Amino acid sequence: MVDRFGLTAATVPVLKTIQNFVYNFKKSVLFHSVVIEDVAAQARNSPYIPNLDGTTAVSFGHQVDRGGNPIIGDGIDEDPFVLAFSTKALLLNLDRDAAPFVFHMDATCKWTKNKFPLFVSDVSDAARSFHPVAFCIVCQRTEIQYFAALRALTDKFIEVVEHEGQIQYFMADAEDAQYNAFTPAIAPVMESSYLVYFFHVITNVKDKLKDLKVSNHGIHTAYRLICEMHYVRSNALLSC
Image (cartoon, rainbow, N blue to C red):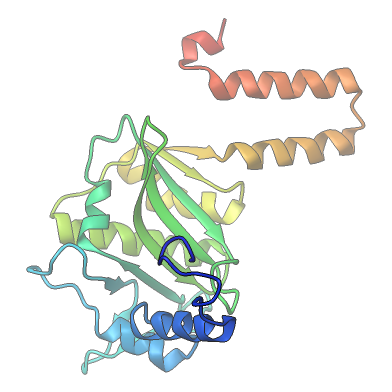
């Protein structure tokens, strides 16, 4: 902060002043809130309209009543809780040739203060750059919740871009719920392949090898083969 704003040790504000400024900015500009009514109002005030500019946030994934107020599910299987946000520009990140790109679905509970699961959808390119597509909050990490969120994302993409998206490689966590949601929501429509994050593969293999009490040589061999598989550039090279 001292370098960014050209301050000195004598002119830099006290910590409390900085914290108040950050809180006010989050509240007034970023619409940060843990109050349900505030979040519902944000969803109500950000519907998608065809002539919307590319950087204005839009909400989707939830139903609305006759007055335009959002009906956010209770979180049970019969009434999933899904609240997603994106922009027209972010959704257009998915409108590209599917072959050189990987679609990512990464779920975490650390980005929301109330520990609601949040998953980020994005695509990565050959230069290892990530291009966000949408941010979605669900209330449970279950197949029903993930399926509803993925279906909402694909439906909103079709509404905005006016054609179906193409996903050839779908990368997500090593989690049954995500795979089971991917299978009916994405796989049959786009003929996608499900990939697992490298970290999750290594973690699960490590736990399995520990349970099997494999020798050190066996452990090193398993890790070597996984790394070779991870970095290989084609099925033909993998078979060599």
